[in-house]
Image (cartoon, rainbow, N blue to C red; front, side, top):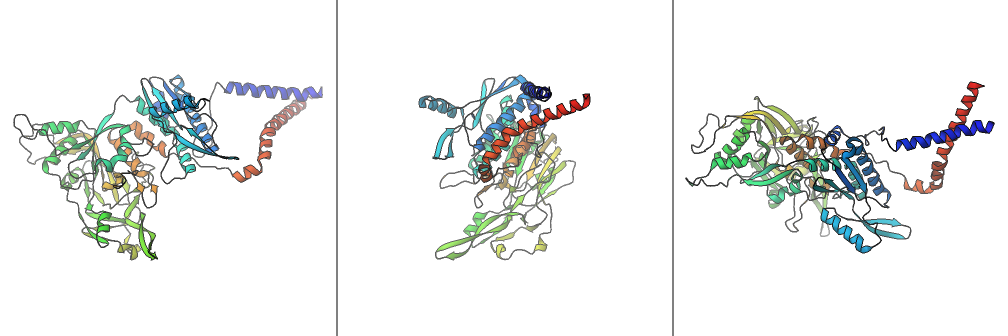
Amino acid sequence: MVKNRIFLPLTYSIIFIILLNAIGGFFHFRVDLTSEKRHTLSEETKRVLTNLDDLIYIKVYLDGDFPAGFKRLQKQSSEVLQGFKNIAGKKIDFEFINPSKSSSEKDRNAVYKQLVELGLQPTDLQVKEQAGMSSSIIFPGAIIYYKEKHLALQLLKNELGVHPEVALNNSIEALEYEFISAISKLTKNRKEKIAFLSGHGELNEIEVADISYSVLSDSYCLSEYYDIEHFDITEFELDSTTKEANLARQLQKLKTFKVLLIAKPKTAFNNLDKLLIDQYIMAGGNILWLIDGVNANMDSLQQSDGYFMAQKNQLNLDDMLFKYGVRINADLLQDKRATEIPIITGYSGNMPQQSFFSWPYYPLLFSDSDHPISKGLDAIKCEFVSSMDTIRNRINKTILLHSSANAMLSPSPHRVSLGILKTPPKEDYFNKPDIPIAVLLEGEFESVFKNRITPKKKNFDFKENSKNTKMIIVSDGDIIRNTYSEKTGNVYPLGYDKFGKFIYPGNKTFIMNAVHYLCDNNQDLLLSPLKTKELQLRLLDKEKVQKYKFYIQLLNLLLPILIIIILGIFYSYSKKKKYA
């Protein structure tokens, strides 16, 4: 009888737990107790998933035996997709596939070839075993299918100068963004057209290659969201009757672009160019201006005797920008918060010895703005930046980026010299905080050519005021420029510091967010913060795990059974006490 009183409740408890697990297989819910809310999907992700109009099918090639790090990537991918399915229901389905499961080498190679043709890149996985090292080919990615379209998605991101463990964790952090961003791109009906303006010495195609097409495998670039062109504003079609430049046709071409990017022009704009740009704005066009206030670059420093004179950048745009609400000043910003450059400090035999010094002309910008363009941005690398002033008019203005609290300004002409590293300015000079570097302007703009003479044969209706539109002005053209090697032809990622072997991700994120905002692409703009979602690395101590391996296994095996027995005894005791 006593045995029945103990074992019956225990049996009931076991049956209850089995039933609870069986029911749990049909209902999925989680309580996210992590500090970084790693298991909670964003509201924008939920909005995208609830608006799906057809089936999304995802094949993830992460099935198989992997080391612990890849197991995390596999497990987290499954959790993210299961979270998607809980929201989208039958509109999303997925499966995990092992591309190497076939015992036939011929069949495996055929599968590998097919995956490469679909856009996935293989990784040679090196695994340390007791007998030595073994290697295998894996495809840490997914293929997403929607209607007649598909998209290849690399889940493992290889980053320059980043330790593999950190790169793996970064890949896990970005899973929600990568999956939902890919789904968002697939389900869009069409891409907007944007253009890099040319004709005045602007950055060429190779200098904006990374922001345009991405030199990494992350597909985070403008071409994934927009159709990109390079438009020379100085090349005109001729009118068939008058044989003169067809201004109306040129303006019509400009109007086909949702956004114009004017990236680091070097020569002056004439009034005809300015009229076309002005009337593009008056028709509701949006512009991202990336303008240097002065002419200054490190090449001048290396080709001279350690110094050069920084002069005002004569672009003939001051009246336009002033009318719209901003003035870019002809000065140079020096900031205590800056990147470092190597300087030769001596020689050991014939070998030069280098040390790194903070170069105040290369400020690192951060943002404390709550605006979605610059909210939560990582550091942004700049070169020879000028200050900006906002002009009082009816246009709404938002400061997106600014200097640190310890900055100073030097008006041009200004002597830039490496001597500043030996005899830096006094600390008291760095007394100008939060100098604006990037400003968003929104509203109905007034034409800079209002009440001014315009060409009689312009052949288009001149507008004095714009529709409600917007533009962003940044007082540094290098913020969008990627470096490249003329010798090897290698293009480096935007924000890459060749001295520190480090990528500043804020540059690309800021430009992407700016273009999304100007294109009214709020969906992708609001998804952008997911790219910087951080997960804390809670790594196990491998030595302790190996040392106490048997006890850990024993604890995991016996503890659940012991808890059930204690609950059974407690239940039996409480029942006996109640009815005794």
